[in-house]
Length: 546
Figure 1: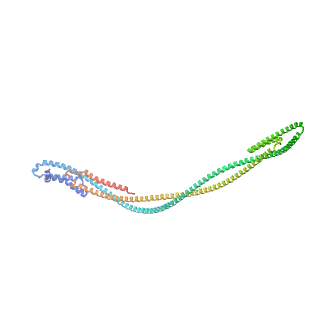
Figure 2: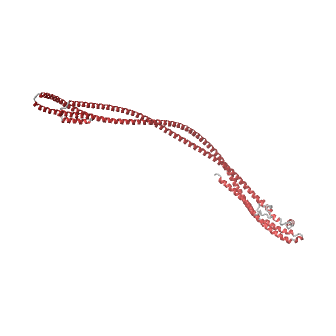
């Protein structure tokens, strides 16, 4: 492995092998530095032109080395074939590098155009951003001023509403005190009403009791009146009976007088008869039997008359007793007496004097009874009149008390109605005040909500302004980064292309890093980077406010 290296460096056969691939690299480096497009056929011609020179240089060598020539020739041929292969590869690489170079130049031009467009858009965006920031600043100042004015107005309105609410609260307190006083007055009125109701109930009970007494008195009066009417009827009946009895008594007195006269006559006759008897006792015995029989007959007649008189007397006594016991039976007794008197007018003529005395006493007794009945009737009438007068006084007193209690009740009811009206008025005022307080509280809540909403809007606008500022900073930074990236990628591509054409960059010593595939990968990543930057820029432009 070491012997071939000095042989390649020291021998003249190895000299044409080494510069043959180096010449196209130098030409490629010159071409890349001067930006001149060359074809891949020139280095091939130089290598083919230099190949006979190598053979010419090897010809005048020593014979010892000529012995080794067949083996070296084969080696050289193999090296030449390898060099040719490498030359083909280098040509292919040159062709691909030229294509990549042209493509990179086109991409650089396109990126330059895009960069100019992006810078123009960036300047326009910065200008719009400055205008927008100025407009937003002025708008923010206006909004702040408006919000301050609105806050001041709402604050003043809120203070006025708070003052109104405090006044309403004081008025509510006053109304509550009035309501308490009214409730106390209502309680006192209710107590008075209860007392008046109790008094009225007691008066009603007393009135009912008096009404019951009045009814009882009225019943008694009606009974007394009824008894009075009955007594009047009885008195009338008794008067009629008394008149009848008087007439009967007068008739009896007349008959008694007649009978007394007859009795006197009979006594005179008896005395005459006794005188005649005494005279006749001195007469003949013959005349005694006749006279005794006549006397006997006369005595029998007198006895029968006496018995009849005694019977009449007993009957009269019975009738008088019945008249005393029952006034109703007097009429019957008098009628019976009248009938008896009518039936026996002759027998009554012989009534003795005691019977007449009894009749007179009985008659006087009946008269006194009638007088007592009249006196008791007058007493009953006086008592009834007194009861009626007392009833009238009780009625007047009860009516007075009823009127007074009704007046008190009406006064209490009127006061209660006034208290209820005042309470209703105070309740209405309290409801109105509470409604006004609720309205003021709702208005205050609405004002506070509007204040909160305005503060939220202000905070949102400030946040939006900050976001716009941050976004504008991001846009500016992104534009600067995009511009830097574009300029950096273009410079990097040119440097990479120049570096790839450098002879030290692509050595043939088995280094395959500069293959066309590696160049494609190196050129592909900046494209993707550019595309990503452009996509970010387009996204930022889309996100920007219109």
